Amino acid sequence: MSVTEMHEKQRNDSADDTVWVEEVAWIDRVPAPVQMAFVFVVFVACWDLVTRFGLVSPIILPTPWETWRDILFVGNNLLTGGYMLPALWLTLKEVVYGFALAIAIGFTLGVIVGETSFGEKAIMPYLVAIDTMPKVAFAPLFVAWLGFGIESKVALAAFIATFAIVVGTAAGLHAADHNARMLFKTMGASRWQTLVKMKLPAGLPQIFTGLKIASVSVMAGAITGEFLGGGKGFGELIRTAAAQLNTPRVFSLILYLSIVGLALFLLVSYIQRRVVFWHKDRVMRGMD
Amino acid sequence: MPAAATVTDLSSKRKEPVYELTGVGKTYARNAVTALEGVTLTLTKGSFSSVIGSSGCGKSTLLKIMSGLIPPSSGRVILQNKPVRGPRRDIGMMFQQATLFPWRTTVENIVLPIEIRDGKAAAAKAREKATQLLEIVGLKGFENVYPNELSGGMAQRAAICRMLITEPAVLLLDEPFSALDELSREFMNMELQRICMEREATAFLVTHSIPEAVILSDVVYVMKPRPGRIAEVVEIDLPRPRTLDMITTPKFGALVERIRSRLDKEAFL
Image 1 (spheres, rainbow over the protein chains, first blue to last red):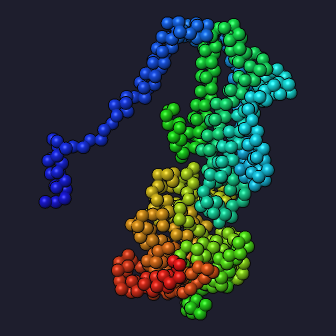
Image 2 (cartoon, each protein chain N blue to C red; image 1 turned 180 degrees about the vertical axis):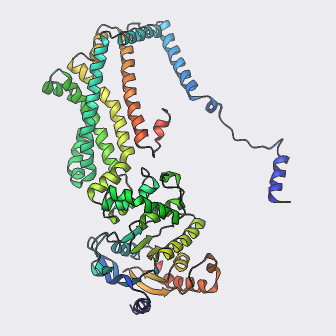
Image 3 (tube, each protein chain N blue to C red; image 1 turned 60 degrees about the vertical axis):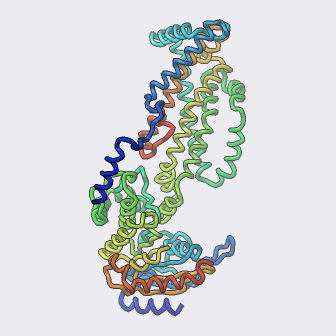
């Protein structure tokens, strides 16, 4: 009897009783969107119960239904070009300018810190020191320096977002392994060639991680700037609604802001997947 | 170093010397450690030499000096009648890891040395040659594949092509296949022999494996640590081309045994 036949026989013998099947937990068989929808339904149901039985004052916590109506109202206002659209547009501009500024400064500093030993020894400690400060506390300073216009918000947004890009870029430049460095040395590559053809591409995954963190925090910077520096942005709308105890409006404005933030994050992630095509980012797989 | 001198004389009668090291030593100023002392060896055209020794015997220091990455503290390092004063295009190197860059296709990886030295236009012209090299190493049709789709052995074949693209006078091989599994490794060693013989390449291999050194080499240099030096030169007079069957012959066994006995005494203290 050949080996194959023996295996075949064993399989047939054990077919009815001792087949060992790998078990899959039932939860893993439920599609991810269904699981997400389940969490959402439970959340809204709890929310509804809390408001329905008057556990919390409706001024503090509106009902889900009220909030939903206000979400539709704000959406309608934005789509029909109502007064909220220029506010959103202004905040969007602050976010985009702030992000661009953060990328420009953060990338430059990151290369200096990651590539030169002077940067690493003499500049990085200061950057770390500044990074540990509560950066929001600088907002009044930016307002004092740059006024109540868009500049102070852009500056604060950029200020808050820059450090993640510096750290990501500097870490990325150290990502290339020993072999790659040796190879470039033996090929007689210049410092510039080593940076552009090897260190930067090798560091792109880390650089994009920094960019993604920055894309999230830049929104927080812009809104904080608006809270403290006034203006005509979405942050001002939120502040006004909160002052009027219009909590459903606060919730729906936050929702639209988070959509903008998510869109920026997804845009960066999309660019990452196109540019760093060889690198599979585990965090993003869940978002796909 | 009387043994080394003998071998040098024997070989240089037959073939012209390509790479000559005379009394090469290296002392690291940082900790005053003598990593290398009085290394004299000659690589003749078309010869395959190996250096073998335990960790810390100065193999990698020797290889760094020979590849022009670090200067020696003493001695002369002459490649093709010109002293080595830094990395040179007539030195080809291969490492334990293939080190292909994942953002470049296989052919783009292979022409990288040309791109670094002569620019993008020259690299574009070298693509045709890269394609021919890929055919030689059995990777025809993989030109535009990204490295993450290549197996370990295939990646090392591509690394061979990258090493050969500048037509170096000497190939420095730093344990090139030690990251591969045993079967792939034996096979790749035979491939390496074939490629070297076809191109009449001068090769210098650093390895930890005695059988690998014996099967591939014309000369095996046995190194010893503290300070790193060549303790013995073993000439391998097995006929070429070598085959994997030779591993089981008594002569092969005797050569392996001779090298091992030289290593055992001090190597693992």
